[in-house]
Amino acid sequence: MTETDATPIRPRRSVLYMPGSNPRALEKAKTLPADALILDLEDATAPEKKDEARDLVTAAVRKGGYGGREIAVRINGLDTPWGMADLKAAVKAAPDAILVPKVSAPAMVVEVEKLMQDLRADDRTRIWAMMETPRGMLHAEAIAASSTRLDCFVMGTNDLAKDLRARFVPGRAPLLPSLGLCLLAARSYGLAIVDGVCNAIDDTEALEAECRQGLDMGFDGKTLIHPKQIEVTNRVFSPDPDALDLARRQIAAFEAAQAEGKAVAVVDGKIVENLHVAEARRLVALSDAIAAM
Ligand SMILES: CC(C)(COP(=O)(O)OP(=O)(O)OC[C@H]1O[C@@H](n2cnc3c(N)ncnc32)[C@H](O)[C@@H]1OP(=O)(O)O)[C@@H](O)C(=O)NCCC(=O)NCCSC(=O)C[C@H](O)C(=O)O
Ligand SMILES: [Mg+2]
Image 1: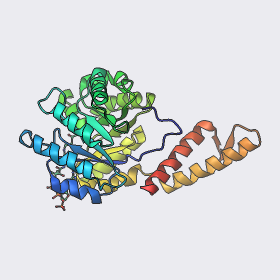
Image 2 (image 1 turned 180 degrees about the horizontal axis):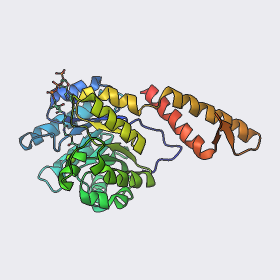
Image 3 (image 1 turned 30 degrees about the horizontal axis):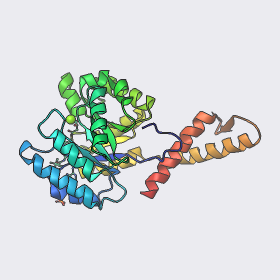
Image 4 (image 1 turned 30 degrees about the vertical axis):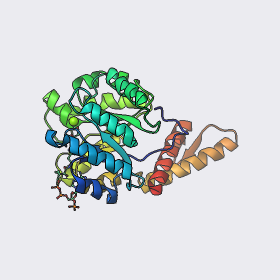
């Protein structure tokens, strides 16, 4: 879906995975300050638990109680024995999004879109795509452009590192070309994009460094695997008070300049044009959306 100025911003600072087979986690999530939850039927659910997890997850989605948190169900791939049953059950439960794993080509999104249409999926159920294979990286632009139901790219840096035979190193240099390609594709087609997980659940410093890097690169937020990662992630991806103050002053100064027939204002000795004001407005809208959650 193309995000326009009229599209309300959905905060996706913290996007927490939880195994669909874990009823305690599904319940706990209702109390956690994550912006979005991924109820996982794929890699976090063991093969012998797949059917049980599908029932648990779809019942949880139908029952609700997750407040303003966005809910995505990660299905198994359609090339697995569980994928089609997952998709049918997820469509019936009508979460905010169905997350398709290991998207390597636009045809995979188109197939899900077509099946969702045949299954009369609710219009508000979007498609999210896991970007986590080398082919997915090479086809990122075509994937981003493949469906009007597609809303968000989710980086799968574990699978990607495995397939690339890349190592996890501080600064993530081996992954930067892929992260950059997906960002270019997502932003070109108005998609949201969230960064991959930090596997070191007890290493807050490493998590904060990855969050700051992701924010600097342009990600909307980060996927997480444990509740203890939420606080740092929300903090880093929230607009900071100084930036918000500047944004509000830029908007006011620009509107005053416009009223005088000018296209440019100056704030704190720096030029403010309509492109700066667009970013300032996005920041204020994000902050308002966070406050409203
Ligand atoms: C890593 C874990 C297995 C740890 O679980 P656990 O031992 O239960 O942790 P704690 O005892 O510290 O848990 C404390 C309480 O918090 C709840 N909890 C734990 N994790 C979650 C969660 N993810 N969501 C919600 N709630 C959670 C526990 O139930 C405890 O609750 P309570 O007893 O009521 O106090 C576990 O965290 C876990 O399974 N995490 C998710 C792992 C996962 O989803 N992995 C797959 C996704 S990552 C990935 O594959 C991305 C991509 O595809 C790629 O390729 O990169
Ligand atoms: Mg994966």
